[in-house]
Amino acid sequence: MFRDESGQRPTQKIFTEVPPKYDFLNRLLTLNMDEGWRKKTAAKVLENKPERVLDLCCGTADLTMHIARNASESAELFGLDFSHTMLERAKEKVAIFGEGRVKLIQGDAGNMPFEDNFFDAIGISFGFRNLTFENPDAQLHISEIFRVLKPGGRFVIVETSQPSNKLIRWGYHQYMKFFTAPIGGIFSGNRAAYDYLAYSGNNYWSIPELSDVLKKAGFSKTTGTPLLMGVSAIMVAEK
Image (cartoon, rainbow, N blue to C red):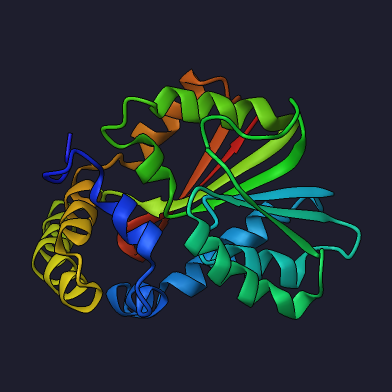
C-alpha cells in the first residue's frame, strides 16, 4: 500500500492543506480536459432528473458546480468531503447559486450522515480511486454508497482508467510517471501526493474491472464510456 513516511496516504496532506494552485494543477495535468469530463459526468448524473443529488468527495466543488448549473430548481443538492479546507474553497464557489442551494457537509465516505435510500443520484469525480485503490476500507466505502442510493438510482464515476490499446497504455503510464508526478510535485510542494497519483493511476482498474467490482457490490447494471482513448472513463452504475 502506497503511503508516506508518516504512514498516511500522501493525498491526505494535500487535501487538507489545499495549496493555492490545486485547481490550476487539475487543469494543467489533464491539459484542461478534466472540466469537459466533469460536464459530461454531471449530465449523466442528471439524466433521469433526480430530486436529491450527492457529489461525493466533492473537494473544491468542481463537479458540484456543473451539477448545480444544470439541475432542476427543485432538486436538493449536497456535497460531502472529509477535508474542511477543501470545503471552505467549495463554499466560495457555490455561493454564486445563493445561500442554501448546495448543502456542503464535512464527513466520512465510509460513514455518511444520510438515511438508507436517500439519494436519487450520486456523482464522484476523481475521488473513487482514493476510496478504493489499495484501501483496506474499499468495500466499506462501496457498500456505504450503495446504502444511501435509492433503488433505481444511479452512481456516476469519472476516474482514471486503463487504455485497452497497449501502446496508448504505455504512453499514458509514461506521462503519469514523468510529467504528472514531477510537475505536480513542483507546483504543489508535495511530491509524495503526485507520486501517489501517478502510481495509483497507472495501476487502477480498467472499465471491465471496475464494472466487475461494482456488480459484485450489488449494482445491477453498469455502463462504461472511455475518455481520451481510455486514459479516463465515465462509469454509470444502477442500483
